[in-house]
Length: 282
Image (spheres, rainbow, N blue to C red):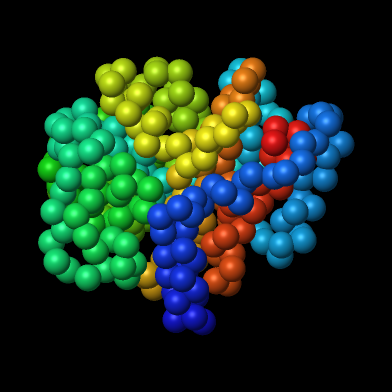
Protein backbone atom coordinates (compact mmCIF):
# COMPACT_ATOMS: atom_id res chain seq x y z
CA UNK A 1 0.00 0.00 0.00
CA UNK A 2 2.78 2.43 0.92
CA UNK A 3 4.62 1.59 -2.29
CA UNK A 4 1.52 2.37 -4.37
CA UNK A 5 0.93 5.55 -2.38
CA UNK A 6 4.49 6.70 -2.90
CA UNK A 7 4.31 6.14 -6.65
CA UNK A 8 1.04 8.05 -6.81
CA UNK A 9 2.50 10.85 -4.72
CA UNK A 10 5.50 11.15 -7.02
CA UNK A 11 3.27 11.30 -10.08
CA UNK A 12 1.06 13.98 -8.53
CA UNK A 13 3.87 16.12 -7.19
CA UNK A 14 5.80 15.84 -10.43
CA UNK A 15 2.77 17.05 -12.35
CA UNK A 16 2.14 20.10 -10.19
CA UNK A 17 5.82 21.00 -10.21
CA UNK A 18 6.10 21.13 -14.01
CA UNK A 19 6.42 24.54 -15.56
CA UNK A 20 3.15 26.08 -16.57
CA UNK A 21 1.07 23.96 -14.18
CA UNK A 22 0.31 25.59 -10.86
CA UNK A 23 -1.00 23.47 -7.98
CA UNK A 24 -3.47 26.25 -7.26
CA UNK A 25 -4.93 26.13 -10.74
CA UNK A 26 -7.67 23.85 -9.45
CA UNK A 27 -8.76 26.64 -7.11
CA UNK A 28 -10.02 28.68 -10.04
CA UNK A 29 -13.71 28.32 -10.81
CA UNK A 30 -15.58 29.70 -13.82
CA UNK A 31 -18.63 30.66 -11.79
CA UNK A 32 -19.12 32.98 -8.86
CA UNK A 33 -21.45 32.11 -5.99
CA UNK A 34 -23.85 34.89 -5.04
CA UNK A 35 -22.96 35.41 -1.37
CA UNK A 36 -21.17 34.09 1.67
CA UNK A 37 -24.41 33.40 3.50
CA UNK A 38 -24.79 32.06 7.04
CA UNK A 39 -21.87 29.84 8.10
CA UNK A 40 -24.00 28.34 10.87
CA UNK A 41 -26.35 26.68 8.37
CA UNK A 42 -23.73 25.48 5.88
CA UNK A 43 -22.97 21.76 5.56
CA UNK A 44 -19.20 22.03 6.00
CA UNK A 45 -18.64 18.28 5.67
CA UNK A 46 -20.36 17.75 2.32
CA UNK A 47 -17.26 18.02 0.15
CA UNK A 48 -15.24 15.82 2.48
CA UNK A 49 -17.91 13.10 2.22
CA UNK A 50 -18.16 13.42 -1.56
CA UNK A 51 -14.40 13.03 -1.97
CA UNK A 52 -14.11 10.33 0.69
CA UNK A 53 -11.66 12.43 2.71
CA UNK A 54 -11.17 12.77 6.46
CA UNK A 55 -9.81 16.10 7.56
CA UNK A 56 -10.56 19.71 8.38
CA UNK A 57 -10.67 23.17 6.87
CA UNK A 58 -10.65 26.59 8.46
CA UNK A 59 -11.20 29.87 6.62
CA UNK A 60 -11.03 33.26 8.34
CA UNK A 61 -11.04 36.85 7.15
CA UNK A 62 -8.54 39.55 8.06
CA UNK A 63 -10.49 40.50 11.18
CA UNK A 64 -10.31 36.92 12.44
CA UNK A 65 -13.96 36.08 11.82
CA UNK A 66 -14.43 32.38 11.13
CA UNK A 67 -16.25 32.06 7.83
CA UNK A 68 -15.93 28.29 7.61
CA UNK A 69 -14.89 25.87 10.34
CA UNK A 70 -15.10 22.14 9.62
CA UNK A 71 -13.90 19.67 12.28
CA UNK A 72 -13.08 22.13 15.11
CA UNK A 73 -11.20 19.52 17.15
CA UNK A 74 -8.82 18.80 14.31
CA UNK A 75 -8.32 22.52 13.65
CA UNK A 76 -6.99 22.77 17.20
CA UNK A 77 -4.77 19.67 16.89
CA UNK A 78 -1.06 19.91 16.10
CA UNK A 79 0.31 18.03 13.07
CA UNK A 80 3.81 17.86 11.54
CA UNK A 81 4.43 21.02 9.55
CA UNK A 82 5.98 19.17 6.58
CA UNK A 83 6.67 21.48 3.63
CA UNK A 84 4.42 24.28 4.89
CA UNK A 85 7.50 25.11 6.99
CA UNK A 86 9.17 26.32 3.80
CA UNK A 87 7.34 29.61 4.36
CA UNK A 88 9.09 30.09 7.70
CA UNK A 89 12.37 28.59 6.47
CA UNK A 90 12.42 31.13 3.62
CA UNK A 91 12.00 33.99 6.09
CA UNK A 92 14.86 32.75 8.27
CA UNK A 93 17.13 32.16 5.26
CA UNK A 94 16.62 35.69 3.96
CA UNK A 95 16.90 37.29 7.39
CA UNK A 96 20.10 35.48 8.37
CA UNK A 97 21.79 35.80 4.98
CA UNK A 98 21.68 32.04 4.41
CA UNK A 99 20.62 33.13 0.94
CA UNK A 100 20.95 36.63 -0.50
CA UNK A 101 17.62 36.95 -2.27
CA UNK A 102 14.91 35.07 -4.15
CA UNK A 103 17.04 34.70 -7.30
CA UNK A 104 20.34 33.57 -5.73
CA UNK A 105 21.17 30.05 -6.92
CA UNK A 106 22.21 27.01 -4.91
CA UNK A 107 24.16 24.36 -6.81
CA UNK A 108 22.64 20.89 -6.84
CA UNK A 109 24.87 18.35 -5.10
CA UNK A 110 24.36 15.74 -7.82
CA UNK A 111 22.46 13.32 -5.58
CA UNK A 112 19.25 12.16 -7.35
CA UNK A 113 16.02 12.68 -5.38
CA UNK A 114 12.52 11.27 -5.88
CA UNK A 115 11.30 14.14 -8.04
CA UNK A 116 13.33 14.81 -11.22
CA UNK A 117 12.47 18.53 -11.07
CA UNK A 118 14.51 18.78 -7.86
CA UNK A 119 17.68 17.46 -9.49
CA UNK A 120 19.18 20.72 -10.75
CA UNK A 121 20.49 24.08 -9.60
CA UNK A 122 17.69 26.17 -8.11
CA UNK A 123 16.96 29.61 -6.73
CA UNK A 124 14.66 30.33 -3.79
CA UNK A 125 11.67 31.19 -5.95
CA UNK A 126 11.93 27.97 -7.98
CA UNK A 127 12.69 25.80 -4.95
CA UNK A 128 9.61 27.10 -3.14
CA UNK A 129 7.40 26.51 -6.13
CA UNK A 130 8.46 22.87 -6.60
CA UNK A 131 9.01 22.28 -2.86
CA UNK A 132 12.60 21.08 -3.25
CA UNK A 133 13.58 19.44 0.04
CA UNK A 134 17.36 19.41 -0.47
CA UNK A 135 17.41 23.17 -1.14
CA UNK A 136 15.71 23.99 2.15
CA UNK A 137 17.90 21.56 4.05
CA UNK A 138 20.92 23.52 2.84
CA UNK A 139 19.31 26.79 3.94
CA UNK A 140 18.55 25.40 7.41
CA UNK A 141 22.13 24.19 7.86
CA UNK A 142 23.45 27.58 6.76
CA UNK A 143 21.20 29.41 9.22
CA UNK A 144 22.28 27.03 11.98
CA UNK A 145 20.51 25.49 14.95
CA UNK A 146 20.91 28.41 17.35
CA UNK A 147 19.52 31.05 14.99
CA UNK A 148 16.71 28.77 13.82
CA UNK A 149 15.60 28.14 17.41
CA UNK A 150 15.78 31.86 18.20
CA UNK A 151 13.48 32.72 15.30
CA UNK A 152 11.10 29.88 16.15
CA UNK A 153 10.86 31.11 19.73
CA UNK A 154 10.52 34.77 18.74
CA UNK A 155 7.62 33.91 16.46
CA UNK A 156 6.00 31.35 18.80
CA UNK A 157 5.78 29.07 15.79
CA UNK A 158 3.81 25.87 16.46
CA UNK A 159 5.17 23.75 19.31
CA UNK A 160 8.55 25.50 18.89
CA UNK A 161 10.34 22.12 18.84
CA UNK A 162 13.25 21.57 16.44
CA UNK A 163 15.29 19.01 18.35
CA UNK A 164 19.05 19.19 18.75
CA UNK A 165 21.70 20.46 16.33
CA UNK A 166 21.78 17.07 14.61
CA UNK A 167 18.17 17.61 13.51
CA UNK A 168 18.70 21.00 11.88
CA UNK A 169 17.83 19.68 8.40
CA UNK A 170 15.19 17.14 9.50
CA UNK A 171 12.95 18.61 12.22
CA UNK A 172 10.15 19.73 9.88
CA UNK A 173 10.36 16.46 7.92
CA UNK A 174 10.38 13.92 10.77
CA UNK A 175 7.43 15.24 12.77
CA UNK A 176 9.38 17.05 15.50
CA UNK A 177 7.98 20.49 14.62
CA UNK A 178 4.18 20.54 14.73
CA UNK A 179 1.51 23.18 14.27
CA UNK A 180 -2.29 23.36 14.37
CA UNK A 181 -4.43 24.59 11.47
CA UNK A 182 -5.49 27.53 13.65
CA UNK A 183 -1.85 28.39 14.32
CA UNK A 184 -1.11 28.22 10.60
CA UNK A 185 -3.74 30.88 9.99
CA UNK A 186 -2.58 33.05 12.88
CA UNK A 187 0.98 32.92 11.49
CA UNK A 188 -0.17 33.74 7.96
CA UNK A 189 -2.22 36.68 9.18
CA UNK A 190 0.86 38.13 10.91
CA UNK A 191 2.87 37.57 7.74
CA UNK A 192 0.27 39.34 5.62
CA UNK A 193 0.21 42.31 7.99
CA UNK A 194 4.01 42.41 8.21
CA UNK A 195 3.83 41.84 11.97
CA UNK A 196 6.33 38.98 12.26
CA UNK A 197 9.74 39.74 13.82
CA UNK A 198 11.41 39.69 10.42
CA UNK A 199 12.36 42.64 8.25
CA UNK A 200 9.84 44.16 5.86
CA UNK A 201 12.09 43.02 2.99
CA UNK A 202 12.07 39.37 4.06
CA UNK A 203 8.31 39.29 4.62
CA UNK A 204 7.59 41.05 1.33
CA UNK A 205 9.80 38.65 -0.66
CA UNK A 206 8.25 35.58 0.93
CA UNK A 207 4.71 36.80 0.33
CA UNK A 208 5.67 37.27 -3.31
CA UNK A 209 7.22 33.83 -3.82
CA UNK A 210 4.08 32.33 -2.25
CA UNK A 211 1.93 33.51 -5.17
CA UNK A 212 0.60 30.47 -7.03
CA UNK A 213 -2.17 32.14 -9.00
CA UNK A 214 -2.98 35.73 -9.94
CA UNK A 215 -6.06 36.90 -11.81
CA UNK A 216 -7.75 40.29 -12.25
CA UNK A 217 -10.08 39.47 -9.34
CA UNK A 218 -8.00 37.48 -6.84
CA UNK A 219 -4.47 36.42 -5.91
CA UNK A 220 -3.63 33.18 -4.10
CA UNK A 221 -0.56 32.87 -1.87
CA UNK A 222 -0.15 29.28 -0.71
CA UNK A 223 1.99 26.27 0.16
CA UNK A 224 1.29 22.55 0.21
CA UNK A 225 2.72 20.05 2.67
CA UNK A 226 2.78 16.26 2.83
CA UNK A 227 4.01 14.46 5.94
CA UNK A 228 4.88 10.82 5.29
CA UNK A 229 5.68 11.24 1.60
CA UNK A 230 8.60 8.97 0.77
CA UNK A 231 8.88 7.78 4.38
CA UNK A 232 7.50 4.89 6.39
CA UNK A 233 5.18 7.10 8.41
CA UNK A 234 2.24 5.46 10.17
CA UNK A 235 0.00 8.31 9.06
CA UNK A 236 0.20 10.46 5.92
CA UNK A 237 -1.00 14.03 6.45
CA UNK A 238 -1.63 16.60 3.74
CA UNK A 239 -1.66 20.39 4.15
CA UNK A 240 -2.72 23.28 1.97
CA UNK A 241 -2.35 26.68 3.67
CA UNK A 242 -2.30 30.26 2.51
CA UNK A 243 -4.45 33.28 1.84
CA UNK A 244 -6.54 34.77 -0.95
CA UNK A 245 -6.56 38.49 -1.70
CA UNK A 246 -9.54 40.06 -3.45
CA UNK A 247 -10.30 43.72 -4.14
CA UNK A 248 -11.93 44.23 -0.75
CA UNK A 249 -10.97 41.32 1.52
CA UNK A 250 -8.32 38.79 2.52
CA UNK A 251 -9.19 35.18 3.35
CA UNK A 252 -6.80 32.91 5.26
CA UNK A 253 -7.16 29.15 4.95
CA UNK A 254 -5.74 25.94 6.34
CA UNK A 255 -6.79 22.60 4.89
CA UNK A 256 -5.53 19.44 6.62
CA UNK A 257 -6.41 15.90 5.53
CA UNK A 258 -5.44 12.26 5.89
CA UNK A 259 -3.83 10.93 2.72
CA UNK A 260 -4.72 7.28 2.20
CA UNK A 261 -4.77 7.02 -1.60
CA UNK A 262 -2.67 8.52 -4.41
CA UNK A 263 -5.52 10.77 -5.49
CA UNK A 264 -5.87 12.24 -2.00
CA UNK A 265 -2.90 14.52 -2.60
CA UNK A 266 -4.89 16.49 -5.15
CA UNK A 267 -7.90 16.52 -2.81
CA UNK A 268 -6.20 19.12 -0.60
CA UNK A 269 -6.57 21.65 -3.38
CA UNK A 270 -9.96 20.44 -4.58
CA UNK A 271 -11.47 20.70 -1.09
CA UNK A 272 -10.12 24.22 -0.70
CA UNK A 273 -11.43 25.25 -4.12
CA UNK A 274 -14.90 23.92 -3.40
CA UNK A 275 -15.20 25.69 -0.08
CA UNK A 276 -14.08 29.03 -1.48
CA UNK A 277 -16.65 28.60 -4.22
CA UNK A 278 -19.31 27.95 -1.56
CA UNK A 279 -18.26 31.18 0.15
CA UNK A 280 -18.62 33.06 -3.14
CA UNK A 281 -15.00 34.25 -3.15
CA UNK A 282 -14.38 32.95 -6.69
